[in-house]
Length: 84
Image 1 (cartoon, helix red, strand yellow):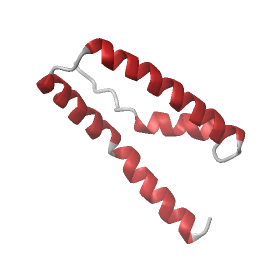
Image 2 (tube, one colour; image 1 turned 30 degrees about the vertical axis):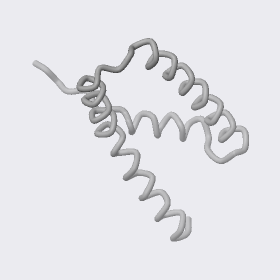
Image 3 (tube, rainbow, N blue to C red; image 1 turned 45 degrees about the vertical axis):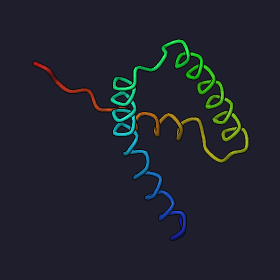
Image 4 (cartoon, helix red, strand yellow; image 1 turned 135 degrees about the vertical axis):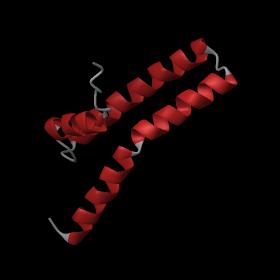
């Protein structure tokens, strides 16, 4: 791995770690503005379709492996807290 790859990976790790905070901000904004649930559901379906196609393209072109993608997803998900 060269320096450019290392810097790229560090940059992406930082951006991935920001995802939970971005989701929290979006949820707060949604609660304040009162979005139309049907519109959000339709947008969500469209985004899922596009993300699925993008991931398949990246894996198909050898940019990322399915295992790497799964690892990134696991790392981006919030850690469960022990309530008890």
